Image (tube, rainbow, N blue to C red; front, side, top):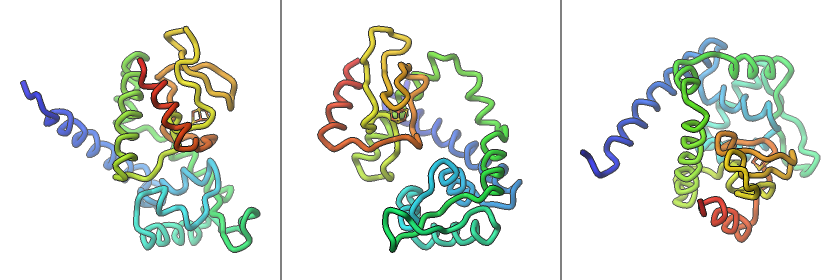
Length: 206
Ligand code: SF4
């Protein structure tokens, strides 16, 4: 038996290949490339400052700029003044863009079908493990900051005695379990460094 991470890394490689294939297939069906589809799926939830898109996607500013320009040219997104900063511009989805984003999200992919076979317990375990891995990658500055529960001011980890739904979100004022942990949430409110450390200690205590 391998005692190192070889088998896990191999598994991630296989899943990444399936994910990429699904992304190209889904985006291509709407005349997009995956980076354009990802920007569209983000701005349909909340407009993004043009200057922040590269950081959110973890790509170069030139690549983000090309993808943004393509979405605007295709009539799927538009640039608007940012009410919070007169010099900044917000990228917003048009009505057509919102419909395309909705169709992209609903498009079945082999990986989405495989995920549907997970039990609620396996799904919770996977989301918990992904939360831990993504936080470690963020701490190592290997990926951009993610809008996930573990760094959210609204997150109250292990606030309830119910083992099925131990966490609480103060934004929607509801309890939830690991299977509903968010790795990208439009309602995320970034916790301060001090708050994030305390949240993590409480989340990781079980
Ligand atoms: S607002 Fe979103 S990220 Fe924050 S705790 Fe609630 S579900 Fe999680």
